[in-house]
Image (cartoon, rainbow, N blue to C red):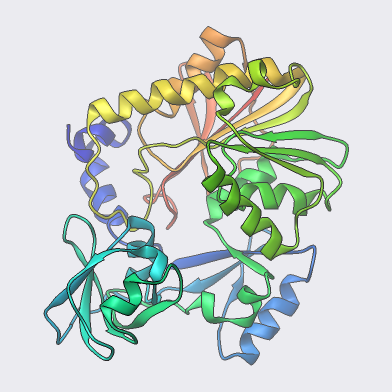
Length: 379
């Protein structure tokens, strides 16, 4: 089943226009200000001193954005290729430089050569002027590979700014930032983040509660938890957080947390059909169905660990009904959760009514945002 067919049930005759939008990045690149360490005004001022222009978001109090320019013609004088992972490819499309962790494999090259960075399926994303040879690059685990000299879109190189390097901002999509605000963690809460790595939402929970909430942050292995720890340490937000390498589908069986959580956040692995720019999408209907079943297991576990009256927020960066509305209905009809309609629709979202369910969808067709979904439940 094609992406068109997967999304047609949600968007009908608008699906072709939606897919064209998904192929392009939004016109705004967002970051969250680390308000534990600084203010939004100071961040904007320091960025200006570096020659980087950013703007305060009109509706999200701790968010700023950078303008994205393009599309531009992608040119590269060299014939060699460097294959990069998908996360790196998205950054390169926006003009970021290439660093070692994103390189999967490469043709031979010397320092000063021009090479085309491509996805695993061969889609060109940027022209890179290398600063070291292939053998030197592959012998290292970190460090810069080369400078991005041509890309379809351009945004400020946020990773090169002082405010980023000092942990004063965290690059994060607007819907992802909004999710933590919807969760509304309080200083007195025990919060469980069931899919915590790389740490964007976990760190935001700490930030919103000034480090006073107790947070259990779980992800499936030591590598994921190491990435989570790195994020929290860089941001200076390693306060009252217990990080656990575990499969949180079994948290109610493996840990003494049954009926103890005030808030639970589930942001599970998904088919990523709302990510922008959407490069090399290859998910099948079988993939989506398998993911939906996987996501439901987190919902079941969340029921056990929440207190009566506790709040669950379920979010995904995909647009398929199977992973979103149908999973939310499953949480209500099969598990026993109650759907919560928020007093105010989150910024940039549209309220969705689906078979008695109320949820919130971020659509590129309504606002220039990634595709995203949020549902809120009580026990």
